[in-house]
Length: 271
Image 1 (cartoon, rainbow, N blue to C red):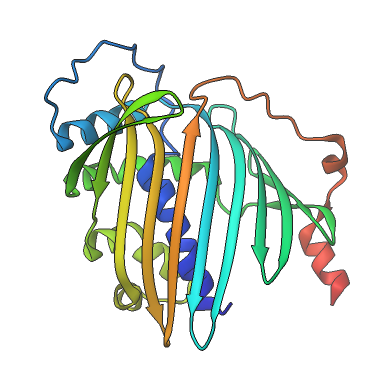
Image 2 (image 1 turned 60 degrees about the vertical axis):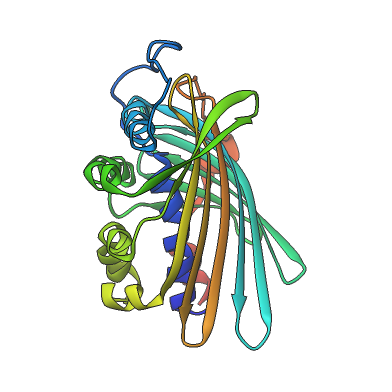
């Protein structure tokens, strides 16, 4: 997978996380059930209430399923499944991800404790890496994009029960300019791809969210993106289920990870 494909894949994954509000701000407690009347709400009102509700999130768990296909001379595909827990208040995260590609499955486990990332790699064991910037400030990214989210076109598709919770189904179709506002500069800085180039690569983007009728918290996000570069078409389909909002996560670094090697030292020894 070349650099552009990797950048586009990362862009797609970040897209659904941002719009689902997974990195919501830690401002308080969940809204009480039954407080707000939901009779006759418009799609825009549901969206705005959800943005407000997600501001009160300080912890959550998630399951994700991502399917990526690359169309060029042949078809290549990659499946990612995983789950995780996030404690924004105490700056702790734990996730497990399985990646299936070319008949092989690679499993990784990651902890994020404050600004230190610990990763269990199949061939290296536990390695650690201090993040260059405060990764928890991704929380502020959602805050800064609130006005943008409030202006995105939405459509109420109906209702559906998700894991025992009655939810509204909201469809969002951000246009190319709105997507570039979110990701153009960030992706350009990290991948060498400019905002203009990203704009040319995007073919279509759709997002659906299942929003709980009682709390207005996002319970499921689904994204479908299609991008194209240098004759290669990249399709990303992603589903994320979010649950256990504001529960105690009790994320502790395992003993074996405490002796993790610095990833820079490991890479130097491999040269």
